Length: 167
Image 1 (cartoon, rainbow, N blue to C red):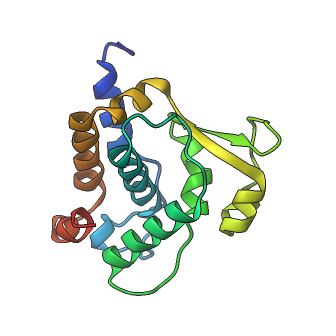
Image 2 (image 1 turned 90 degrees about the vertical axis):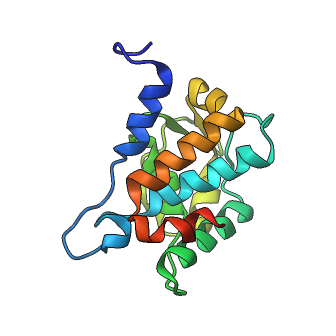
């Protein structure tokens, strides 16, 4: 239990309340008028655990994640407007369950310049690590599926759920 909540409830709330850009007019109803980057990256992470539930607790900024993020982005917006997974990879460290490990083994990575490109991110960040409790939940297929549903339902308009789920 954390603050009187079951650990599962803690992560459900964290996924429901991701810190997301909400500048008026920047984002559409499809993303509930907030930036979609963090939820999309979390879907990519969920995919990694669905493919290998025994995986270690590290998420490397690989080409695989970059391509998966781009596929979700294109499905969401139904266009080729680019974005970068480097942005949420960096900023998720402010949501209370994601920490970055530097390529030089430092754990304090604070320069937002690495959000500009995957190459800059890869040069500075070796991997991200999840809270161990979240890592354990994502390794369980039923909880992975449930947390994935929470991400989708909490961060996207019902009209786009199908496009995101089908990837």
